[in-house]
Image (cartoon, rainbow, N blue to C red; front, side, top):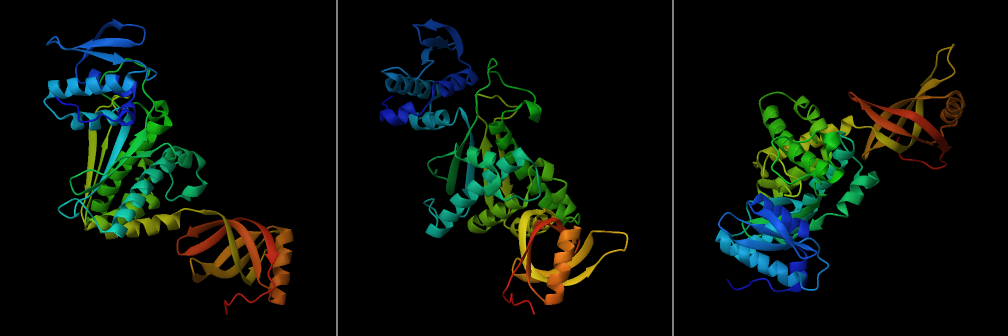
Length: 379
């Protein structure tokens, strides 16, 4: 079969680990060593392949081309199909598909940009959940998640509507490669694989929660799924993707270098789930404290018991562009300053951890009160 892929740089993008994991899971057996850096793999039919153990060979690209050609012949597939499987063999491959693309697989430019951006967001939300499951995140502050995303590679778009492909890094297992019957406990997984597991489980849980809401279970359907990877960030990105593609299809093909109980996971979202997910995101965000929030406003109420040194004050301020009242308990020194600001009708700035308490807002761990000498327009 004539080689369809001849570019050396493209061929060398396939790692030795990808080659070994692919042929092993396809039933090839290592039979003997070949020289100093390679091994012979064989099939019961007698066909043999020479697979290098390192890419530091002068003719590595040519060897990869020969392996692809041989595999294509054995599997009765095109070399391009084999190449695509090999290029993702040592990584978890996330495919985000917009079902309602045009017949040629194209979408409007702004819609396409949004699909790329939101595909990144669903993976980033999973990375944040893998670090610490929470209802919502400020993703820019999660250093481990950002470091992970810097290792993710963007693959070529694929035919079949509009498909964004993300290659998620996965370190190879150091055990003998074989198909696993059970998922390892999370504590035994490397962080990179934990991310894609949280993505798969979070997508599945969000899909089920949206169904449960329709059946009358309310926001609890989402909050109980937070430990599985559901978050406001994930729900917002999913809702946006569904709107753009008029539906959504996300699949995860697991790396062959860390065997799993399944080869692939696929989750399909209907158009009707977008609004449910958007509202779930809004409610989940309200449940998550906002650390280091800086509030500007007026002290409109204050009081403390005789036996206490700390005192409670009410701050009239803006949150998300809306005027609200926030209660907080201040230590003695700050409480004295707050009383003075109240008497003088001076605006203040208080930093603390903002938390929603039912329909009310509270500022916990208040600190760093400052006076503001300007009108904030809250009257």
